[in-house]
Image (cartoon, helix red, strand yellow):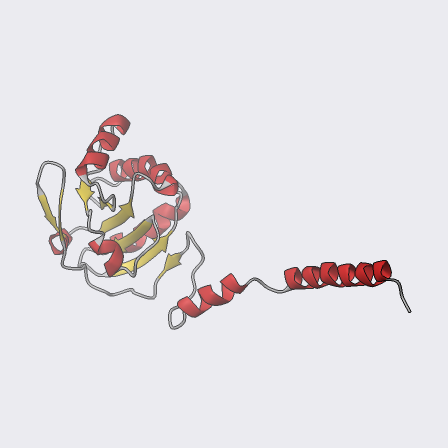
Length: 193
């Protein structure tokens, strides 16, 4: 009859080996993510998603810290790049200077519209804009996160390109390098229509 210590040692090895086997299984999260995206094409973060191409500009109105209004359908006539962001979102903050530069380079050809999803609205956004001295970006506010919910509870940043007729061309979830040639080519898709 085996000794008690030998029995415990064998059981201990079985538990350790069993734990290793569990770790070799694929994680449950990707399956859940795939299931959440069922019915829509999968796109990698930072890649353009064209599954909503042709959708019209949504009918929302936003204000800036001074109370000026922006009715999104009124953007028609000029291609528009709409960026949903927040001051607490590190990738969003990283993108803001790049978007400001893009707005400068594309002035008159493309309107870059940044809409903050900060729940504290102007109290957070106005000092952020003042501190960073953006030249071309406008501090539009969406403290109720209406636009993020409209786009499916989007993770931030979320950027959408609309052509001059107010139709969606593509959207990008996650941060993106708006200074590179790839960005120039993607934005150019709305300029040729």
